[in-house]
Amino acid sequence: MSEFRRNPFTGEWTLYAENRKNKPYDFQWSHPTKKDGVNCPFCPQHEDWTTPAVYQDGADGAWNIRVFPNMYPAVNMQDQHRLADAFYEQEMGTGRHEVLVDTPKHDQTIDMFSFTHLQNVLQVLQMRYLDIRKEEKTAYVQVFKNCGAEAGMSIQHSHWQLVGMPIVPERIRKMILLGMKKGCHFCDMIAHEKEVQTRIAAENESFLAINPYASRYPYEIWILPKVHKQNFATLTETQMKQLAEILHELLPKVALLRQDVGYNICVMDGPKDTDFHWHLQILPRLGGAAGFENATDCFMNIVLPEQAATYYRKNLETIEREKKKWKK
Image 1 (cartoon, helix red, strand yellow):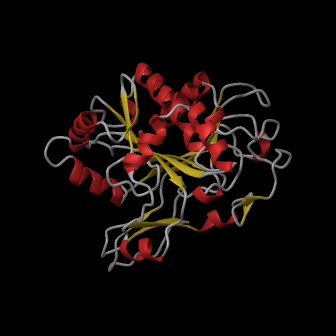
Image 2 (cartoon, helix red, strand yellow):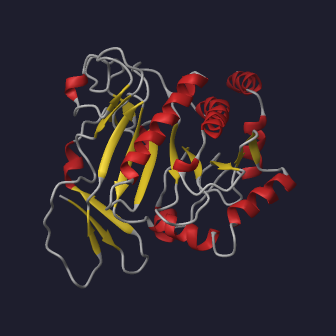
Image 3 (cartoon, rainbow, N blue to C red):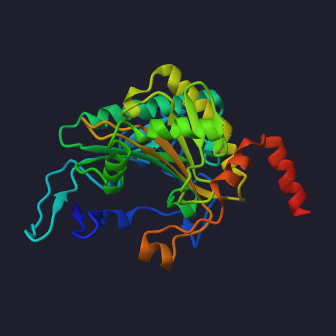
């Protein structure tokens, strides 16, 4: 059974998904327990170790991208029964939870992908996003990727997750409330960042990547479409190509921040029938939330966004050369 419960004092939702405690886990104290694909359910030739695929771009054992329902879903479409508590607000954990395995190679990470393959992955993500979003009870679809143990990754093999939920997360609701109050504050922010130039990490025709002014995480990146886009579904084929281009440029630099660095990639999306400015966030995990953050909900960041932008604007060769010099 899955259930969302809302905190009456902060408005935040907590998702209780008891069956998730049974999922496999490849890490112990943030270190991998195995490095080959012999026992990996996401590797080719192990297709019968997962639920049946809803999408696969090749035959068993010969695919590049594969999507299937999560065997340990945080939400599901089955009938559920619970005891309601009239004092509090709750919602049944009704929805769909899918896994998108984005490479057949067990030890390949997303920063190693070719541009063409990365573009194909984004297109399949959009296709599955659209299919989940059309469900009548789905209010919001969260697309995300956990890279590394510190970012919450449980199986080492590279993959994404898509979760269709009956509620709109409080963080998204607040971003809509503050960002869309008078026009679009995201569009205003893009214009300002282009004017001051100090926090731009990368840019192409369709997208601006910035290290946000009040970033929560060191080296945090927001990738925003320059033209107002309400949600992930509205990206055109050309825009998807240019999103792949900017990710292909930035992700190897994220991977060089530290050996085996953990990071999350999160699609920040517009709920159904709601105006928003869709964007993507990359959140490196160079330090965990501790007592101060958990008590105050105020993050402590050790790197100014202006410094982070200077790092990302360097080319890969310069970054690699500087890291070697620092190690000596």
